[in-house]
Amino acid sequence: MALIRNKKASLNFELLERFEAGIEMRGFEVKSVRMGRGKLEGAHVVVRGGEAYLIGADIPAYQKANAPKDFDSLRPRRLLLSKREIGEILGAESQKGQTVVAVSIYAKGPKLKLECAIARGKKKYDKRETLKKKAMKRDIEREVKGRG
Image (cartoon, rainbow, N blue to C red; front, side):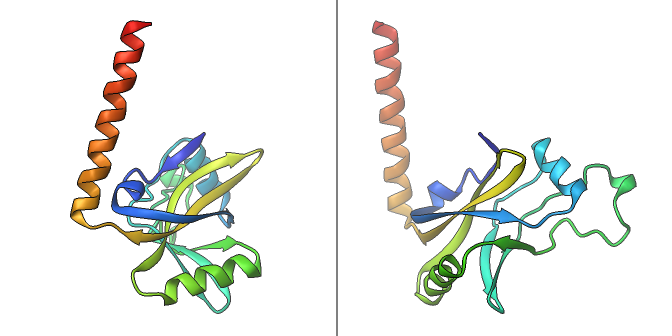
């Protein structure tokens, strides 16, 4: 079950390949995420110096009064990925029209994991088609449920 989800990721992007990564966070950020506070809209992954970072994710402190004075909720957070996965992300970044977006943050046992995906932006007509398919699927499920 996702604690925080980027709801627009599947609408705005065609998700090609998914990855699971650990996130380097402070304790008060972990508490905040477990409470469901935070935003992944506009968050993406970049590779700098052989390490992957999550950029643009807004994760506020659990309690503002107890957070350090220099705390930045939009700070880059290091991701824990294997060298092979970092290489794949670096290759996707270098290709035109592809990016790596954050899809969700979820709990896996006591640890928090980030699901990110190599993605390609959708055109406006692709977005409309996706919404039509979603609506048709919802209508079919409603009909089946009504009959049963």
